[in-house]
Length: 370
Image (cartoon, rainbow, N blue to C red; front, side, top):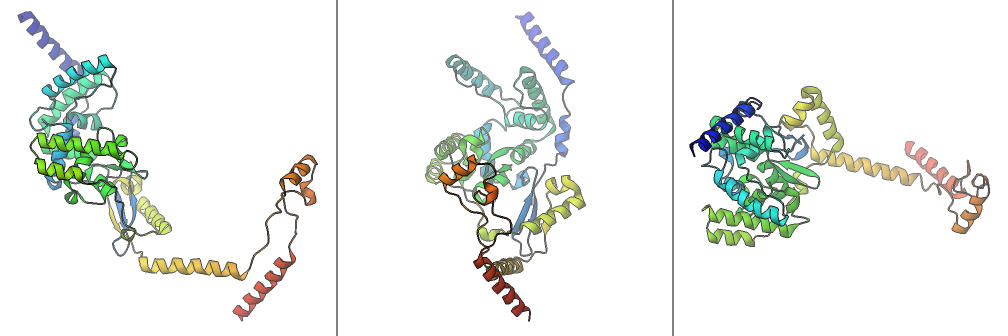
């Protein structure tokens, strides 16, 4: 027994020494500044454009509602506030479950804590290997010693990828709340907070537009976990489960469409602050665009083009359509198209109606000029 204990301790010390010297510096997380979306607003304050390498809105942990934090803790790491970076109880439970899953051919489950997920996201890769898992555990323990629980949770909730809608992805809970529900974090209902907490496992599997039933099922699972952990009451859970989950995009009157102007602003920002600053700096830009005047200018220009086109009339067909049977005959004869029977119009060919309308258009232009 003594020999076995000494051997186990010796093996543990060897692992720590072997992997400990190869690990990245975890202290850099204390100075981490995530890439944040740059927003460009029109003169009246409405959103004109967003520039982002990763669409993220950073929110300090103190400003994240307790309900949102509780939902993620229940869904991802119920012992987050008590474990030292690794959840031994959860790890043991996962090992027992995985034994049964392996024998039945099912996909194995993980037992990563929130701290381990932060470690993997910031300092390591998603490589599936024993080496990476050992490094992840060692780093997680070190991070817990260097940062507070709130600091770790802040990193997690602002960094995590939470899916996309319409090709636009979101990173962090604040950006996800805006993308899915067009709400700030403090406006989310319990049902909506639970849905966001359901996404880290596999966002694409719980798409509200294409897999609504699976999304609701996963949300209900999170609500049940919150009830089990004592964060909510049974009445609150029952009410939240009845709530219909729907994606709510920004209303049209909340944004301004002026693509060419927005592109000029983007170029100016890149010229001043570089690509890194423009797309990752999190600037808030107030542009000089007046949406009312822009709408008048667009309408005037569009109507002017339409009036010009109508004054000059119809110009005749661009080419002569050939019946199918004629096309087959012409295709078998060399240079048939060049004699006016093919798909190309004859050079200089204009209809009598075209010339008459063109004369009227030129006369109309001279009269307006006079």
